[in-house]
Image (cartoon, rainbow, N blue to C red; front, side, top):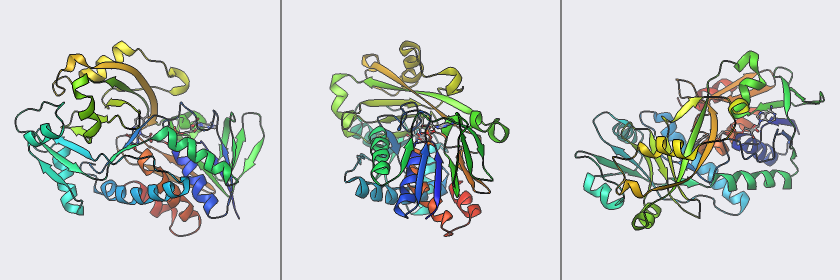
Length: 367
Ligand SMILES: Cc1cc2nc3c(=O)[nH]c(=O)nc-3n(C[C@H](O)[C@H](O)[C@H](O)COP(=O)(O)OP(=O)(O)OC[C@H]3O[C@@H](n4cnc5c(N)ncnc54)[C@H](O)[C@@H]3O)c2cc1C
């Protein structure tokens, strides 16, 4: 039995904890907030899992592995926190994200259906698309009910002997030695020390990660016009509309319809900029970007903004860095939720010697 110490009770930390407990290790999670922490990137009513990944064939293939890992999570939790609505990528012009996704689907053998513009508007009667638009539908895909998942994962970890120290901020990390120093000066040592601190990583390890780019992103929950309530609920999640960076998650299981617009992000730090938002201005920036594509646009009513933070660099590739007994997971972007349980299993597999840290890092980077 080895000692696994984990900093952060987000989807990554909890997934590593679960995988470690299943292999008989002793697990301690150190979490600065409650566990789960509502300010963590992993905490929102839903996060999307979807096959469309543009030209990133490695991540397209990884989604199949991720679904396998989620099935093992559902078996452990005794329930399924996912709705298979499918996902649609909408193309507006040659060479855009949907077109690249179609090329990737063909290359990796991912089943899909191509719809004409009329076909997309029939499936999604709340949309109005320009001439020449077409859609690419793939299954499975849709909302993972994130906050329910991390809440139940934390409980599963506790029920299976893991220790979660909440309100326990780690102030210093010695990666090589596998030692985390709590804010009160006490220390805990692991045979594996996993740092899964999300957007707080640069503050925690300024020497090594102080330059990492942390972004704040707001997502907008909306009430659609009454005549489109049901069609939004029934339609696939929208993964992209051209290169517009917009996406939507359907209102299933009471989670609400959520609109994201990735271009609406800015460099910021959670510990400095906080979690407040101005509903009027932020909803205009997010929802406004969809004006050309939503029928009866003026009738949409924004209800709240969900604020989250993540580390992201130009590579758009996850990073898993090893040094001595320590392992750091970062660059999780707006992408990691879907891969959390899979990454957790791979990390503990690597610790057991099933693959090298270099191979794990290469795989996580989507190659
Ligand atoms: C707005 C937004 C939309 C997204 N959409 C999607 C999506 O649709 N699909 C998808 O797959 N992914 C999506 N993501 C990405 C995904 O949510 C994140 O990549 C993932 O949740 C990161 O998990 P994590 O465990 O690494 O980090 P987090 O969930 O942020 O957890 C880190 C934890 O570490 C704790 N911590 C930090 N520092 C310390 C310290 N010093 N001491 C103790 N504890 C500490 C924090 O309190 C926190 O609980 C989105 C992210 C955001 C923000």
